Length: 379
Ligand SMILES: *[C@@H]1O[C@H](CO)[C@@H](O)[C@H](O)[C@H]1NC(C)=O
Ligand SMILES: *[C@@H]1O[C@H](CO)[C@@H](O)[C@H](O)[C@H]1NC(C)=O
Ligand SMILES: *[C@@H]1O[C@H](CO)[C@@H](O)[C@H](O)[C@H]1NC(C)=O
Image 1 (tube, helix red, strand yellow):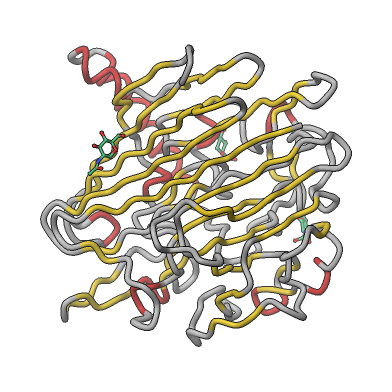
Image 2 (tube, helix red, strand yellow; image 1 turned 60 degrees about the horizontal axis):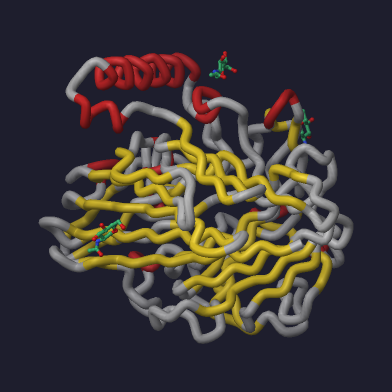
């Protein structure tokens, strides 16, 4: 299961266990501290509006489940993950978290900013992925506000990313709000402020969806996908945009400009120098990156009739089809295999910090990064 470099970065067992122990000790210590500190305990939180519910945890500002009906009223959890928060500590697949401070890959984990070289912790072979070994997805966030029910249930998580974290410069304040803003609508609003030094910031939400239901035992190859993307950033065998080339999707298996089953051409998509088959592609969203909320993707499972529509204000989106899931432990004793879910990861340009030809993701002190996503579900 850990054969493929990149997403799968095993932490040595001893370290993992020590880390787990420390996590719970921290939670315990805070639990017995001042009232406000208890909000930093690791816990699960539910947002609910009728038969639509979302479960989250401040461990990585993570989505643990999204429960939706189908047209017959059958409820299903459409998000891959684990049952308990503790089990997520072992997660090497990024089930549901916010990743950062720099999501996706940074070549050699290295970049130059204002003439200074920064070397990040490398956790994907010789590269860095999702902010390093202990990025935003493996940090305890503070619950700032929480309203579980009513008209517009929401939760806001806060994280202070510190100067030197995983090799990155400066302190950063990050917030993520999940809000049920309408019927079967989930908004995700991220912001981050560079407090004292210039730093790159690029966050994404790494949820694996399966609209049939995560426990259905069915893969997502029959889901139809439509993407509002005519171009993609060409990725190399290490999934880096090393050439800087942006090319049309027309005439390639990456073309989802009209609704197409995810599986119809998936066997033609060989990535990582032949070590995986499936989508792990970075799309340039048509008209994206100007700060406006634009349609990004529509996905529908013909069997259940459940569909999602994603809107976002970001310039790119990584489409990932769970290529490296391989008997990976899931919820209620179930296992997930290849293509058990898909991820729609809106974000800035991958490895922008090493590509001056891409729009910059660097914040100067006082500048604010904003990333908005809206999921609209139907059935
Ligand atoms: C994490 O993984 C290790 C090794 O597989 C296992 O012994 C441990 O119980 C796991 N922890 C949790 C909380 O699942
Ligand atoms: C970031 O989001 C939080 C939570 O919604 C909000 O309180 C804060 O004002 C936002 N910061 C900026 C700079 O927009
Ligand atoms: C899945 O894991 C099994 C056992 O670890 C291994 O033999 C197999 O090659 C893996 N499959 C893929 C597609 O990586």
